[in-house]
Image (cartoon, rainbow, N blue to C red; front, side):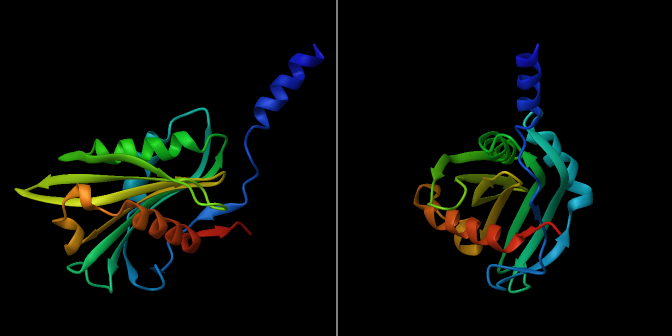
Length: 189
């Protein structure tokens, strides 16, 4: 009987303490991108639906669109994610990339590649092609998940929009994603 109780307690304690929150700062990437739209209310539920059940306890979701130099025509960065408590850091990262590739008019041009850097969470990146109103855009999407935060970062510039997907430097975008993480994740309290 005691063994059963210990197993039950261990399962419940499989979730880490909530120490960090995902935020939408006014600027990202050393001030290069300015927050243009907070889409958390309209897009947040989709993120919760993609997260999966059983290994996440979501506190809140955030979705923000950032413009390069405050000018959307120069480029944009989309940060969408959640924070709470995650007993599994692989599934949220994989599910976010899967969800991005299944959007309307989307195809995965280059499948997920995994990047690990000592002292940082694992980042996975893929290249998407989006057909919209007869125009095709190409851009990288990267995702991370740690014990308290998980997010996807999409970066679109005039340079990436027409780039050959196989020539996309996903290692660069994985590092960019970690920089976004360092600026958007804040301690709770």
